[in-house]
Length: 173
Length: 105
Picture (cartoon, rainbow over the protein chains, first blue to last red):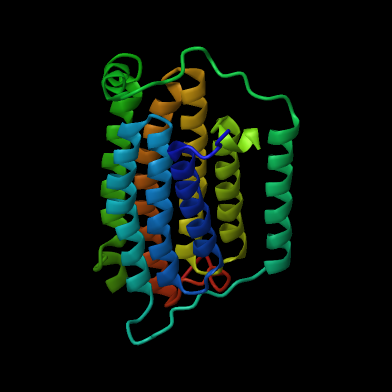
């Protein structure tokens, strides 16, 4: 009657990493610490995706979030806090209603999950690698969203480059 | 105890709910615009965990594809938001969202 299989233990370790580092992101006052704790949250979430047999999404998470978004956020932190300022603090406001809302929402959601009837999983759960199925779905049913995502990314690229460039002609007038 | 031993849908939903609430807390209480962006990323990750969990236990591919598009949108959103934050910093010399209160220079 042993409850602790390696699968369960590893799942709980990654769940703890995800939740605790997310809590650290939110509760620490130092912006740099927040950014680096977010790294562990993204890695923990990627590990949870592997548990959900979405291996391709896990790799995409590591590449896009850790390699792209986190670097962008760190760049933003470095850019908007002067290097001389040794402690880039972030002030808080509405701390009491925020905490109340946090606890109330977690309580309400978990109460709903655990007191209503249990879920009925399908007979055919996703098993093994799904990379091949993602390829088929992308090129058949989801080909229009796929192309639209490319247009959106191009627009976002041009827009971000336009917004962030240094010498706007309008600023010299 | 048995519910703790076998990993089911409720475990993933619990993690996702906690991440969502922490992200909302960051968006509500922080003044620094970059930490607010981090809160938004936490919320998007929570949504992704939900999509993938329901997709696995449903046996269909819809949630997986949707989470892929969520990641694409999150990347675009982060790039645009950082550009806006850098512009705000250039104009107001601060990224404190409670001190940014004018629409015109």
